[in-house]
Length: 317
Ligand SMILES: C[S@@+](CC[C@H](N)C(=O)[O-])C[C@H]1O[C@@H](n2cnc3c(N)ncnc32)[C@H](O)[C@@H]1O
Image 1: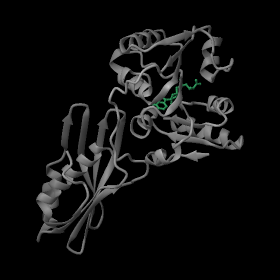
Image 2: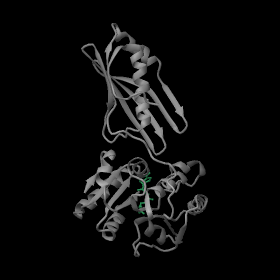
Image 3: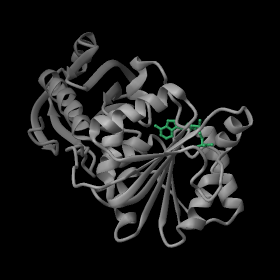
């Protein structure tokens, strides 16, 4: 079993395998069912909630389960950034949180935009499965499938060889009507949705001006720095002195399928300044993270810098 702590390593794991995804695996029982059904395939599960992730992980470890990849995070992010077009055999989403209010559409695992991503990642004849008990979500899904021209079948009982997930059992016991939607990919449309990322960390090194120590206050006075460009947004709102000669800038970052909070470190040593991203674990370095890093680095350099020694964020966008 592999725990995917660095999502950018996913492409190395998936080459030439049949791929099955489950998004929002909750208790983890359905992943076990999937592995029995597709014994030769690589089964990849994503679960955003820490407590479900940990309890499912314990269960799978006790079963000595192998050949799974588990990701603690947003399943949409994984597919958007790290899974190639036309590479997936099946994607299963059982009882996604419905977020029934229209204003919450973008939070849904099955929003219009995320369905376009799933569809484009399926192989031709690959399948997307969605189960739900929520009447507003059923109406929404039928509308989205029609709008996108996707062929679908809607079943009233489990198409999973009779297997019912924890939530399927819960809603059946409460006599709620469940719909199981199956969408089969039948055309070549990719919808142009591919997240861009880099697999290296941005770095910036420069010589400091004389008297730079007194200029840090000027930088912190210019915070917060905000940027909004289309669906992308960042806010650099605070700078903390972490220890002598080290400062951490706090960044809130949001773009489609990716919301992250991280820190950019500025460190002084022997007349030079070093900037890098702190806490690198699991951070996705999208092109917008690069832009954020470049914007802050440029601002800091204007105040404190004498001459650039090294940078790898290019001209950026
Ligand atoms: C109602 S539960 C269903 C659990 C399980 N699929 C079942 O049928 O028993 C929805 C699950 O989706 C997870 N979830 C919600 N949004 C997610 C996302 N963007 N990526 C991965 N998991 C997500 C939740 O944490 C929760 O465990």
